[in-house]
Image 1 (tube, one colour):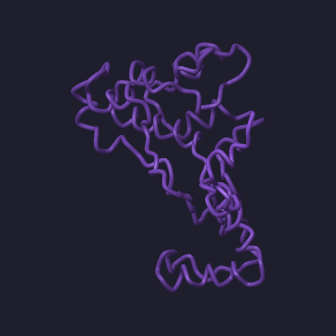
Image 2 (image 1 turned 180 degrees about the vertical axis):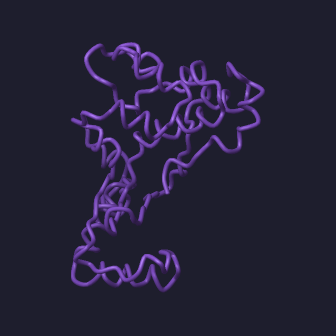
Length: 214
């Protein structure tokens, strides 16, 4: 077998034609950690009104940075409050019914497959088609879908400015920004074409779709 680089007649070093977005994110992360770059970067964001003025001054010593940020996923890992967190955040009208479900039936209700009998499964495994079948109320359906999508999001670079404020950077080279719902079947549900509650879902088609990154 020959040399692929030679076959492609490519003599340039890889860094000149690398298209991997995570590589560029790593370079940005490294640059921001060098010298006073992070401090200057935060100041620029403030002076250009990208970060709200009421956030106040941002001190570098209070800042942390993360590549491939997945806070909801990592909060979920090992938690003993999974069911309680879902119920408190989503506020479903049938809360009493959900509280009484077995672990397996709870997972099946939200469409996790295969439904575990041992633990409350990660919301990122919920199925939009199943949520459409089990949740009739539009607002509740939208909340459940957005909750599911949040657990599958991994922002390229996030700068934490304390517990409740963050700067989210999604690195793109030449690919388009992704959006949820992703699959054609799920998009049909939001357009009222394949929904158990088609007329209502169609009214919500513009508000249900949400960007997968900020």
